[in-house]
Structure formats: C-alpha cells, structure tokens
Image (cartoon, rainbow, N blue to C red; front, side, top):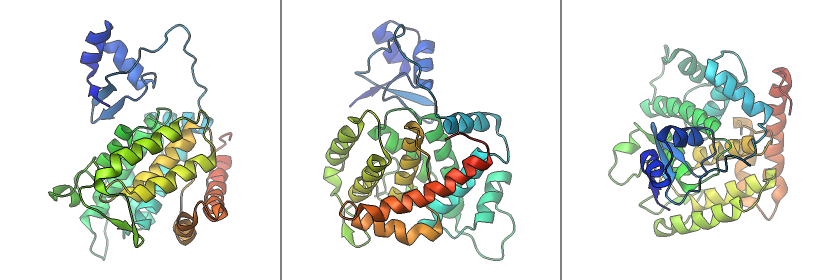
Length: 296
C-alpha cells in the first residue's frame, strides 16, 4: 500500500488540507498514521461519509486516559499506566532500571542518583516507551496496519545504539534472520507477506475478543518482524487493541513473566496457559480501574 501527504490527498479529492487533517486526528481517515508530525494517508483511502458517519462510543478508560494525557494530570490512571507498563515491558526484555528509576524519569525527566552504572539505552528506551504509550492512546481506535506497527517500533528504537548499526532497520522490518527462545522465526524476505496475511485475517473480525488479541500477539511474536523490540511492540499492540475493543487491558508484570513465556510457547495447543496469565494481569489492572473510579 502506498501513502501520500495530506496536501496530496486534499488536492486529489477537492477538500481542504485542514479538513483532511481533522479526519486523520479524529480517526475518520482509515489507515492514516503519523510519522513524527507528518500524516501519512493511504493513497486509496476513501472520503469519510460526513452525513451518515456514526461516532463510535469511546471506552470509558480510553476517554480518561486521553483526558489525563491532555491535561498532564499527575497521580491518575494515565500516570500509573505510563510507569507500570513501561517498567514491566522493558524489564522483561532485560532493562536494569528499577520501577522507582522509571518513575523518576517519567516525573522529573532525570535519572536521579544511582550507585550503579546505568545503560544509556535503558534510559532512551524508557523515554521512548512513554512516547509509544501516548501514540497508542492517540490512535487506539484506528485500524491496526503495517504502517502503525512500524511507527511504534520507530518511536521505541529511535536514538538507541541499535539505531546506529547499519544492519538495523529502525521502524522497518529486519534485514537478518533471528530466533526467539531458540525457535526459528519468519525469514526477512517473507515478513511483509506474512504480516499482511495476519493483519487481513485479524482486521476482518468486526469486534475482537480477548482471545483474538492474544492469538494475534502469538502470531506476531512468531513472525518476529523486527531485529529487536518485537516483544515490547507486541505488548503495546495488545494494550492498544484492548482499548479499541472495550476490553480491560493488562500489563504483563515481572511475576507473570515465566507464565507469559510458557503461554506463548504452548498457544494454541494449550490456550489456557496464556489466557489465564493475561486474565490474571487483567484482574490486576481492573483493580486499578476500581480504585480510580473508572467503569469497565
């Protein structure tokens, strides 16, 4: 699929650039995504139906996250999600930053004093992960596309030591074969076609269930489209898709890490392993929603 600028789409369809920009930011332009501050619009995108379009009812949690993000409210569910999701997802992948250091970076934009040496990449990827969460909140109701997945990866890995390696594609698919947990993954030359098939099947479901989201995650991780950052990208996608479908999202915490990996290894033969792990994590997040008075 090719993408064009807002100006090109506006000229092609005889509408103003401002109108197209509003369609993109409100989620009415299916498949459009941001790269930095620039909107990318599918060249074959249709004009939204202005007369008959229905405003989608927003998940109460998503509304709250967007409100608190916009106001930069401290101490709410948005604040808590930024810290907990970032710390746990990075920690699973080997980050040595503590939960308290992650909180300190988020709240003060500084690392604070530490007796131990700190990996610069851990700091960069922590800040980048905060931005990824903002991105999935902004685009929660947008259709999941290859462009969106690449953008999440680009945000996550920008400015890291990996980004300076000639063979590492930031925001694009891997150039070299890789393994995950000793298991072979999709060859680089087949990533685009396999992910396209996966997305087509997934997006054909009008209303996704928790099992649909988990199944997509397992298949995404099996494809392993990027050289690094697949796990964090995949878990961000799960969180986004839960928000999009009115499902209580979840954070895989360190104490669930073993059960999470066991579940991935055994899905779909023993679906209960991964499903129960996600449900346990979901219960933990639901308890936060109760505390913050958010209906679910």
